[in-house]
Image (cartoon, rainbow, N blue to C red; front, side):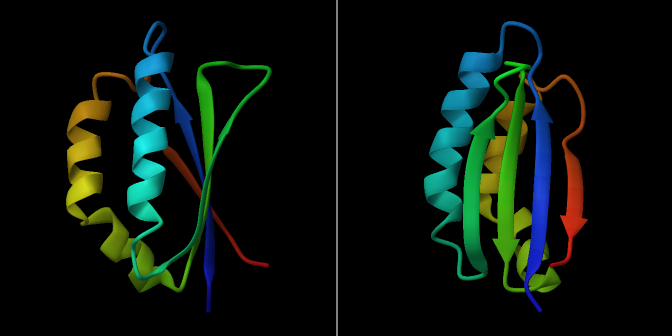
Length: 94
């Protein structure tokens, strides 16, 4: 059964542009993953430090595999300098 996820990502003050650029690059890479059905990046109009990723995966195993992809590991290393805190993941069912 497909798994839908919303990831709420908050940038440290002054890191919004770097995070936005890196997230935009990441979108193209993640969309190539076999288990990825949808991967969309949104920016809050009310809170410029907030980014929301809407994700749809074939299943929970696909999401777990996503976390181990080289591009995700590399992003995690760089992003720790730009993030105000941990990414909040909200998993939902239709």
